[in-house]
Image 1 (cartoon, rainbow, N blue to C red):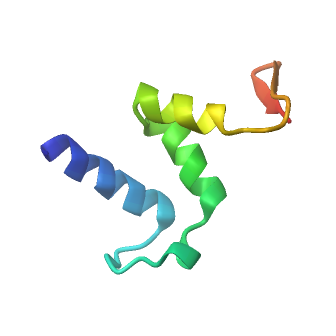
Image 2 (tube, rainbow, N blue to C red):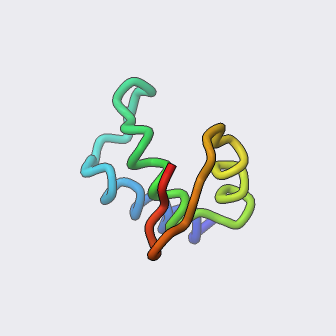
Length: 65
């Protein structure tokens, strides 16, 4: 549970918000997905990448869609 609280605090820092009453329309999906790819579990990363419908190429340490 402590790990989840730490993770949530990091997420709040990324989203630049202290408000716990976050609405779905207020979430920047792109930043959330970046956060998951950097800090998420293996399962979360796999889900994010599995739902990308376009071709993804890694070139010179940059992702190209």
